[in-house]
Length: 402
Image 1 (cartoon, rainbow, N blue to C red):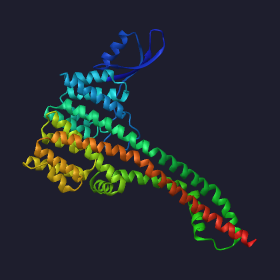
Image 2 (image 1 turned 180 degrees about the horizontal axis):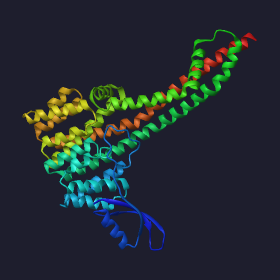
Image 3 (image 1 turned 90 degrees about the vertical axis):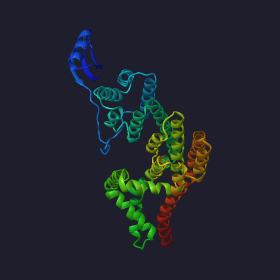
Image 4 (image 1 turned 45 degrees about the vertical axis):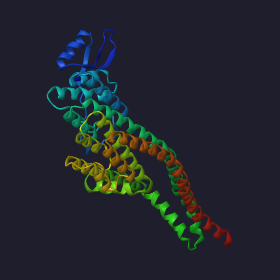
């Protein structure tokens, strides 16, 4: 049911602004007339259906809102409520204005014959490919409420993981920001004043001092170019690593990085095992479950390994074989999966692996700050030491001459 935003005067002559659900603008006007509201302006709210490649600043629907909506939709569908009615109920109780409009439009599309997954796909800034693909698999397998429940768990787990990473990065970010600000003040304000003293010396300056003077002059004269270069690089990096060979190269590099590579592997293994165990315990066929978990993995190379495992299972083979062959999944994981397949206890084995790796992820993130702190301190100390050495040595030479 479309949502109309209106502005008018209530019976006491006070201006009111609000929204109303109605099948058409004519019916909306009739409802407002019955409420004795004198209309000034009314228009239908439309959601922004930006495509994935478009640049967007900010996201109106938070992860919390999305997770709550997904969990509520799963509950309603499990209770045998029709999807259209469930979407209407969610629209009525949604607190987020953006989500309310989107759900209203999705309900209208589903009512007109579109699938739920196809309707979600029209809003890629809210429902990403993983979300859409999982809903599609749930619709095709008749396990939509299970998939939605898992999606809600997955979305909430994403939020918890982001909060942990954000917590681990607070100190380094503060140190980097404060250090960059101090360096900027030194190069823009302090160094130019000291440079005047160096010029009066009429002597050959040490190389570190020349470097400091050059950096100071560059920042002071071309600060705008530095900011522009950073912004352009970030946009190019995002575009390059979002698809194709660029995404493949970037994901391969992430897996090879010392600490980050281990973290990426642990997160994806935990996600793969926990989701697959849940789906299999819920009666989802293994091939459908493999399709779903493949879309949950955030690394394209690990995705390929899971896809090869799916093909191998379809041909009568095992799950553990292709995973071990890829060398992207730890040997302990493939060994335990192999034991689970042979003993017929795959689901419990997957749950054990997921729990174990989730604990490792938590421990790794907790230890990340303790590793980064000394590295940041050493970096800041080296930078400050370089500047002090560059400035102090010429001044000491000047005092010697006097």
